[in-house]
Amino acid sequence: MKVPPQPLPTYSGLTPFRNWFRHGTPVLMYHKLGPRPPGVRLKGLYVGERLFRKQIRELAEAGFSGPNYDQVISTRPEQKQVFITFDDGFENVLRHGLKPLADHGFKAMQFLVADQLGRTNDWETCEGEAEERLMDTEQIRDWIAAGHEIGAHTLTHPRLTRVSESQAREEIAASKRKLEDLFGRPIRHFCYPYGDHNDRTVELVRDAGYETACLVSGGLVVPGADPLRLNRIMARYASRSPKSLLRQLKARWNWA
Ligand SMILES: [Zn+2]
Image 1 (cartoon, rainbow, N blue to C red):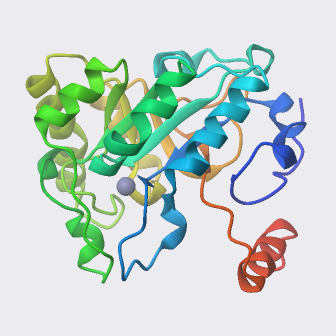
Image 2: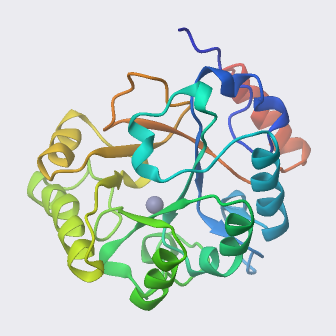
Image 3: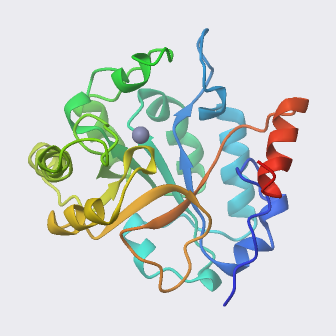
């Protein structure tokens, strides 16, 4: 089945995506929930709690379920499943995300940076981004106790194709072991920081024993998709500035 082009480069609500979602399963990628602190550079990575609640409610009302992430491998479009994923393990997701997810029985996945638990987003602050706290082990236990899942997102959040092969292997394999030891559960799912990967990275992920690995964009997951290169769709707040609309239009028609 040929999948038509994505209606918009990013997801902020169901309306433009309703028909398109019939062609595959969306795996939505979120980062941070709640109010933006002053000085934030990548504003789109914050989704306010009210908008997040609206996004989940609208999917539930349209008949979508938010199942356990293990099902992403076997999902089919007619099942109307949507997978909610969060990258990096931010504490603000625990604060603002649990209730909206629980209200509609949606499960969500958190991809954790294993050496940074309880610390902050160093890999972003070094580039001038605002500091945010990451969940510590107790908070991650709360997340799991609420019925949600965890996956690995390396030890330190490097660009895996820009570090040595031995370092990439360590980032991929040791993050799995560390999270398994800490939380006493198998870690089956991986997420490439920045979506950065090549054929060798994918082999390292396979060697480490992961069942799936996901990217940061690419569109829908269709039947027969490579489980170690799963597409996602970036969810963000709906910016209505003329600059942002122009950027979306350009991306839509590949002008840029
Ligand atoms: Zn990340």
